[in-house]
Amino acid sequence: MSLMPTYAPADVVFAEGHGTVLYDTEGRSYLDFLSGIAVTSLGHSNPAVAAALSSQAARLWHVSNLFENELAGRLASELDELIGGGRPLGGGVFLANSGAEANECALKLARKAGGRGRHHVLSAYGSFHGRTLATLHATGQPHKHEAFQPLPEGFAHVAFGDLEALAAAADATKVAAVLLEPIQGEGGVIPAPPGYLEGVRALCDERGILLIVDEIQTGLGRTGDWFAFQAAGVLPDIVTVAKSLGNGMPIGACWARADVASLFEPGDHGSTFGGQPLACSAALATLGELRRLDAPSLARKAGSVLSEGLAGIDAISEVRGRGLLLGAVLDSGRAGGRSAAEVATAALRAGLVLNAPSADVLRLAPPLTVSVEEVDQAVSILSEVLA
Ligand SMILES: *Cc1c(COP(=O)(O)O)cnc(C)c1O
Image 1 (tube, rainbow, N blue to C red):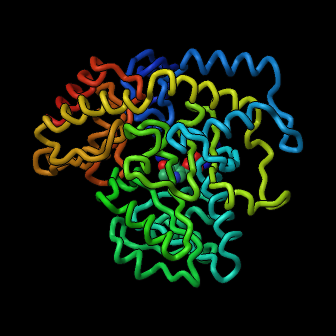
Image 2: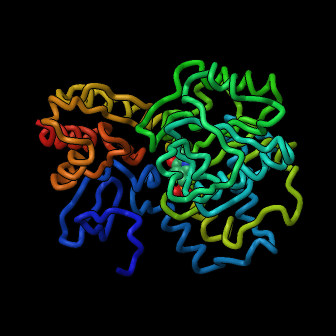
Image 3: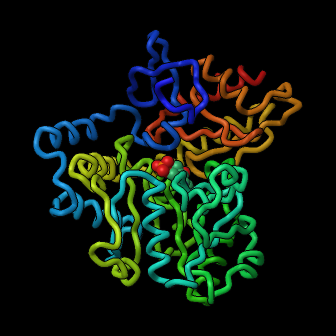
């Protein structure tokens, strides 16, 4: 053993990727309809991001956050404007290296806002917010908690989409924040029911509770809007972003509205690597390309072709999600009694990369730049695998 056994071994090793296509060490090609879990939204080895990275790599990589770097400030302003739907909001951004770290920042801000005693955070069953001890406790999957108890206290969970359950649990004398994904990605691609986010926003306003929306998987165009909360017409107090932000370069961000962001004082939070020039150069190039291509419209167009194609496969009983974050629910009878994980393995052998976030759900999250031909090809591979 050299790597710790935190992931089940897979039987392919990828060596190269361009756009939607991956090549393994034997030279076989695959259509990548997972994008490294909704990360490579511009496809593999995107030329614009690669050029920005290599030019930055020849100039300056890292100076620590004891010194300002101009790229971090620009990235923060761009995120602020995207979160505002094109209008700068004047919020603050903390740059981190991953999704879990972006959420850690959000949780620490919530504790600063609420104060000791009023430090509780409510999140939803079925959610996923990361693997650090605090974000693990925020993750609403109790079986994942067992081995690691005691976890940091102050977390509780309610049924996703159930506004009454949230209202009953949201005791404003104890609860600082509500933390939600607009579409539960790891939970099996489960969208919040219509009206839910609007209801949560109103409840949080009424009780003075912060609304943190985890857009780590859904953000930056994937669901057909820049951010999934925008489809509900609400604005969270805190938004976290990561996965696709660097198109594969590790970087995460926590945005907060100005009065919340300014609760942090020097020394409250930090990161050695967060926001370093190399990662920021990748993120700025990624945002530039996503904007140039109008990422949300790409996701909407390719997403409707993909979801129609999937819905036409006999063994798929339901297609859910939005844009290019789709879950295909298997009809166990018509799928020959196979689990989604077994189907994903068979698809991989047939040259299509996807995964199974839950027992009967396949997740499809191709690059937003996927072509209609590639979508058709993927649907026909999956349909053969499921025949
Ligand atoms: C992936 C993910 C995270 C964790 O991100 P890491 O970069 O793996 O730490 C948190 N929240 C959501 C919704 C995610 O999809």
